[in-house]
Length: 302
Image 1 (cartoon, rainbow, N blue to C red):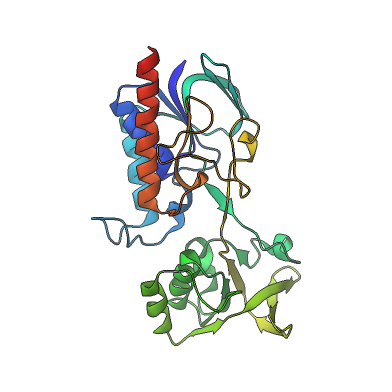
Image 2: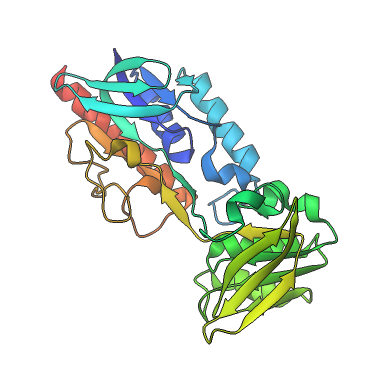
């Protein structure tokens, strides 16, 4: 029997494990893929207090090692079901079942797809969801980024340094990203902003050849690019828990700032829950809060 089982080894989950272990609780962390979550793909973190310029990979690695050094048990298994057995929670993965007094959901988000022709077929063949992962493959080429948030603009800024030309395509006429990032991007001479426009088709045989875009007036245009980087948001990884946890219409876990879900002893932390700001610092804050709420719950019952 574990004290705390944590679903997800991103910043929220690993922070929960650190706080859980510091409270001398038996902690197990499940991760379906690799530790670090989305932050591991960030080339440089500039908005984390006292650590400007740290790479996402270095940050995630230090967090992971800190959790392990404190004694957190980490298993690379996918959680497919959680059941409330009143006296304990039963967590089922693709490899087995585990009992725990509490559960913290910190499974993060997946990349949102455009859902257009050619996207699935050419993913990995010119279509990417991570500029810092795949941008180097397009050095000196023409590429496009689609999206209007911080991730899209940060991707475009990164690609401007290594690509011949970058097209930034956004369906609205204004960006949602931080003004500082937009101002920096406007200084670059190898970027073209294409606003009020959607990518409507991705073309190519074995590799991406060109994309088709359509503006709000219905006018179409073809753009020759070797790479298309899609940054149009995230989808919370909560679908497997819909049978037990209350989710909103967008699939995010409904919680208060105390990270409590509708089930006693189950908490949600980080990007998976309803919140106004999804950033590294708020994910870690959630992780700490959820862990201490779990500890409080365990101690009240022991």
